[in-house]
Image (cartoon, rainbow, N blue to C red; front, side, top):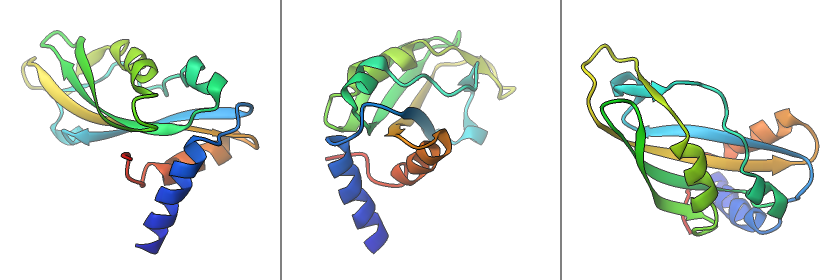
Length: 145
């Protein structure tokens, strides 16, 4: 419990004091449906690029998004559920999500699907490994103000 409070406080503080130079990483967490229950999976399982406008401003944070995937595997709607900092990452993150293509990996018939995902945007100066470790910790904190 104490660790979660410290992480949440550190995340809120770091959002506004992130270094603009260094390494950036984006971590994706699929919240709903669980991977085993999903009809659609991202076609390319590569880490999305850190949005340039966030990196230039040194903004780190997270966003939870509701995504609609149609029966053809296209992203048709992206809406922000919550974010830290509030609403700053919505537009650049939505651009990233809207570009995703989906493939049916379930064996079930193609059908529309609603997804709830979380994107964590992390930055650091030392190494990419350090940034990825930060992102894993950040992903455990609440993504809301």
